[in-house]
Structure formats: structure tokens, C-alpha cells
Amino acid sequence: MRIAVSGSIATDHLMTFPGRFADQLVADQLHTVSLSFLVDKLDVRRGGVAANIAFGMGQLGTRPILVGAAGADFDEYRAWLERHGVDTDSVRISDTLHTARFVCTTDADHNQIGSFYTGAMSEARLIELKTVADRVGGLDLVSIGADDPEAMLRHTEECRSRSIPFAADFSQQIARMNGEEIRILLDGATYLFSNEYEKGLIETKTGWSDSEILSRVGHRVTTLGARGVRIERAGEDPIEVGTPDEERKADPTGVGDAFRAGFLSGLAWGVSLERAAQVGCMLATLVIETVGTQEYQLRRGHFMERFTKAYGDEAATEVQGRLA
Image 1: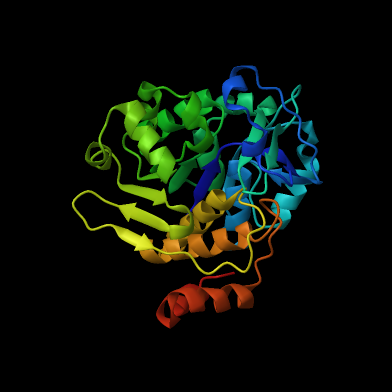
Image 2 (image 1 turned 90 degrees about the horizontal axis):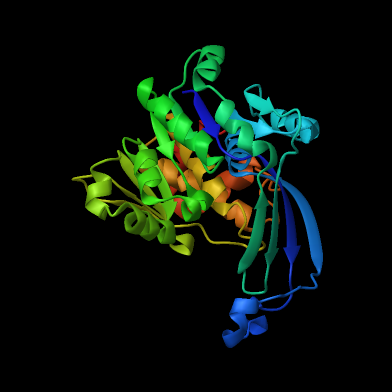
């Protein structure tokens, strides 16, 4: 199964503030807020939602096709992704702009304040999915993640016109999109990804109820934080999967991307939706235990030991033969 993953490609600058943001905010002065946080640590990491998802899929051996735009500074990042099983030949390189950049500070309560520079990501709207499909011999699914909004709309419309199944995954772009744009992006999606908060925001902005959205998508996949994930389909009982026990909680950045990487890999393997969600939750747990979105190591024995403990021998037997 050939899966293309479109979305942002970025560098993450992750900082840690030892205090609490809430202690620095004065309720009656929020309209003039001006704060600077002295941080303890800076980690410069590779990121971007599409690159994070593709990296995780590459770790699991499913050879995803990364679709996005980057700058001339992408060479080292490209080599890293290729070395970890990602097809980067469909990444557009800008002649003038730098690769996108995410700057984020996390406090002691794991609250986050971040800013995102789009850079070369704005050229993702120029990418034609037909060119990607022709190069690899066709596409079975396109995951359309947070990206240049025009690129997200173009990829969605092209998937519809060419009858390519697609997954809608707005994540960070929901805040800037209006209801009409969101309705266009989700209508007809085979999978709709969101977290619990985004689920409510999608319903509020579109004006569609949960049941109306379920009538327009094949599967609605909602991540629930520490409670795991829920998969819903119209007219069927929901599937709920819990999360494995964490060994530690280091950094929440990229956990949702890791879940998607595991879930999409499960689809590529042809396992059940429940199994795919279990793989996603296991991979997400590895990421939350690591600072950075692509800094975890997927050791097959360790992965299967923890997967078996969380989900049982039957689930482990089904996954083990497919895990790279």
C-alpha cells in the first residue's frame, strides 16, 4: 500500500521553562501582555507534521512518500529521512525561502507557547499529486496534514477529482480556517483525524453535528490524550483503544504525529483498525518519553515487549510479523 504524507516540513526549536506560565499572567493586564521567559534548555530538532509522520512510518518499515516544500537548507534533513526509510523525492525545494521553523517553550505543567514561520511551506500549493502518483506507480492513500492552507485545499480537491482516498488532518491549521474551508477539507475523507478539543472546534466552525460529520467521512479518529483513541463509523459501535504505560513523560511535542504514523502503518500492513490504533498508541508513548519528535529509537524487541504487555499476545503475534 503506497501512502503519501503531505504537510509541513520544519525545524523545531524547543525550550524548557522551569516555572508555570500561569504564575506570570496578570488577569487584568492580559491586553498588554509582554513577557520574556528565561529558559533552562534549548533543543534544536527536526520536525514538521508530515516529516514527523513519515519518519515514524519509515521506522516501522512502510516506506512513506513525503510530500511538502522545504528550502535549500534541506539537504541534511533529507539525508536523515532517507536513512530512516522515507521517500523524499517528491519534496519541492524553494529557490528563495528557508525551511519552515517552529519555536516552542514548554513550562513545568507541560503547557506550551509556540510560533511558526512558514517559509518554503508556502510553495507546497505548487505540488501536483498526479506527478507524485505517476512517479511511484499510483497512490492508495494521501494523508493531508497541516500545511500551507492553499496546498491543503488543492491536495484535497485533486484527491477527489482523481478518486484517491485521503485522510483529513488539519491539526494546527484549524484555528485559522473558517467553517467553509473545513467543510471542503473533510467532506468525503476516508479518515478524519483530530484530538478531542479539535473535534469540538470542527463541529462549532462547520455547524455540523457529530452525526452529520460521520455521514460525510468514512472513519472519525479522535485522540484522547492519556485515555487513548476512539474510532467512529456511521452506524457502527465505536472502537476504543487505551495507551500503554509510560516509563516517563519528557515532552508532548509530536505525540499526535507519532500516533498517526503508527495508525497509517497499520493500514499499510492491512491489519484491523483496532490493531492499527494500538500500534499508533505504542509509537506515541515512545515519543512522549523523548525530547523532540524524531529522537526516539524504535528497537524491535523493546517495542514488542511493551506492545505485548499493553495489548496481549494475540495482538502482538499479528503485529510482530509485519514490524520491520
